[in-house]
Length: 92
View 1 (tube, rainbow, N blue to C red):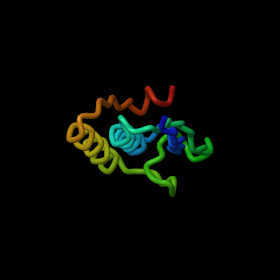
View 2: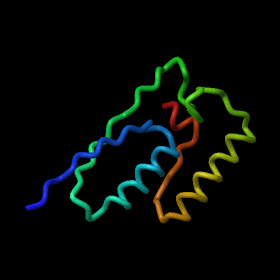
View 3: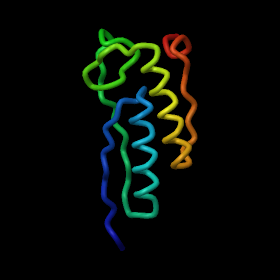
View 4: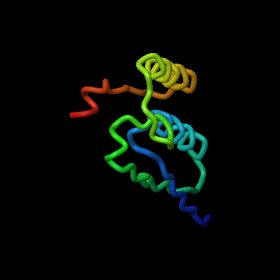
């Protein structure tokens, strides 16, 4: 009987980059004797609901649009289903 390995996955739940990374890791580990436990990285509310990077900077509308298109390209490339929320929906 093989021993299972516990893998802790730390990610920002509301980050599209984190979501794509977690999905890729889960695909890579599929079929291996591992148990994945997801753990959120706490992001202080004072940083706001949009967290583009760990610096917590604000994005321009143009940069935000580019990032959105980029997330969708990467998700499509790797066959990852993704639905990005609009800022207003996310804020609710």
